[in-house]
Image (cartoon, rainbow, N blue to C red; front, side):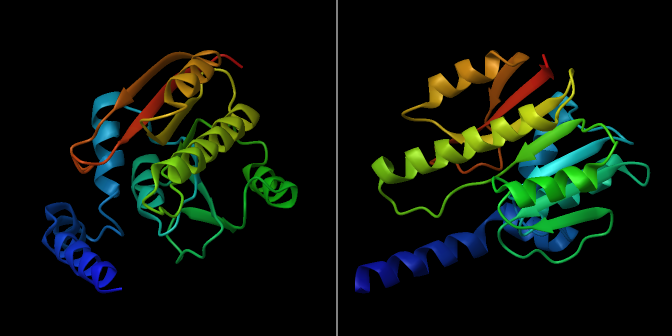
Length: 207
């Protein structure tokens, strides 16, 4: 128990000292993860004014917050998570598991006739610290998000997701390339160097 407590103290200190955490607090963003999407946006021009964005696993709302700023008043952000999320201007939130039929139907109903331009996901499972457990869980979430993108994106659409390097990584990239013309990975500076997380950016959905 003492070891776990010590580890928790170390994490809290690292979190408090984190420059991106401090910057998010100064600039009014909900999480340091906002800067990952902002960097991806700077490099890949994923989201433009007037677009419709679906944000999977959105809580606490950092990526939805950035997306809402980028799409502007004429765009839409539709977010979903099994966890509650405080309301955000310009964001329509559906609470629940998007892989369940009733929640998926709710998302589709909210989307309505509006074409979805971009699907984003910064989801990660609750980490146990055991890679043989965490990696399959994380890959499963990516597979679910990829499947969702295939169900809602029109030809030309964009899909962006967090993905962890390890078992299943190359197979997932191959799967994504079967549906998108351009697939690449990015490691934003806001991602901690020791983390195996990267971001898959898939453009030009083939439909």
